[in-house]
Every structure is written in C-alpha cells, then in structure tokens.
Image (cartoon, rainbow, N blue to C red; front, top):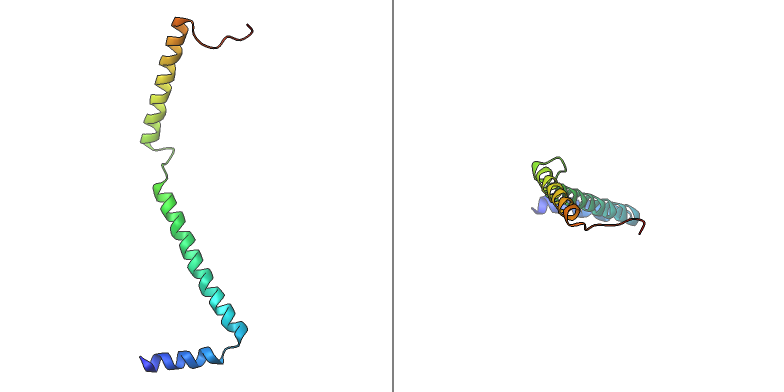
Length: 84
C-alpha cells in the first residue's frame, strides 16, 4: 500500500496550487453531476405516466362522476344561472 500511496503523495505535492484547486473542483463537479443524475432517475421512477392505465381509469371515473353531478343538477334545477 505504501508503494501506491507514496508516488501519489509526491505527485500531489509537485502540483501547483491552481492545479490542486482545479483537480478538487473537478472532483466536486463529478460528484454533484452523479448526485443530480441519481435524483433525476429517482424522480422519473416515481412519476406516474399520463398514458398509464391507472391515470386513464382515474380520468374516466372523474368524468363519469361529473356527468352524474351535471345530470342531478339539471334534474333539480340547480347550477349556475347566467344573466339573472
């Protein structure tokens, strides 16, 4: 392990401060990009597709309920009156 670490430490010490800062920033950017990618993947995995059967069934139920409510309102004379 010392044979691997010692050359890395010597190489790091030989770099200028600006090169060290650039290397650290690059590493941070890679970590942030990976985090954003994972977050997007998680969000996409939880998103309900509009074309899914679940959404279609729910929309159908809502539409059916609205039609029933409109029919009941028309029978009882309830609803919005325009122009009164």
